[in-house]
Image 1 (cartoon, rainbow, N blue to C red):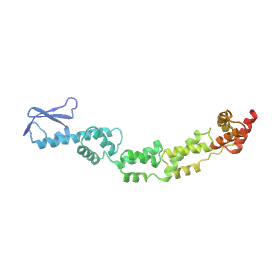
Image 2: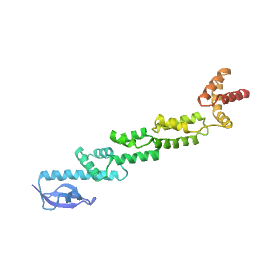
Image 3: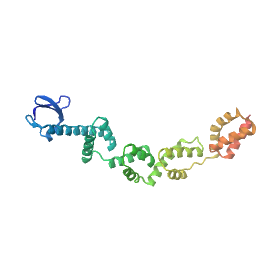
Length: 267
């Protein structure tokens, strides 16, 4: 049998109390645990009661640590569990702390997943495939992943993907329509959109070039290609290599032929 001989508030943490049994320091508890077990000076405790108190205090400490972790931003259950396990708390203590967090509404994977979806849509403009990877990394259950992603409508995906595409169009003034479309396609695929969405967006993008624009583009890109090949080839081989390179960049044949003719006349 043990008797509480003294209870002292900690100097560095006034919300925690040192418990002395039989005039010797035994353990510390937070104020909630102190009240729950009605710990007062002179109270007698059995060993099983001490074990129960210290276990409850471990849960309280894990709970408070998790609350601090959650105070910075929303987290998934997986993230909180990993944080507590890494901090050295046992599996049983962690599960009890998480259950308490969920009961009190501090932890909810469905709410978290919905918020993550909206954030990734609005700030990163990600597609479903990329957001699914984010959910997987956060340890979200597969069935919940599917439920959350099903709310990301086809219309929303097209609208957001178009915003990304239009930005690439504005940045691609010095590129051919073919080059711009490739940039758009690559970007949307990296962002996690499906081929169906990519093709639908590309069909809605207008990328026509006027004659003077083609001339400006081929002068900007063609000169570099011409210099590269004129040092290695001559005659028909030079023309063929240059044509192939420019055609792959999306230049029309008539624009390419006019450019090569001008270059040969300069020689």
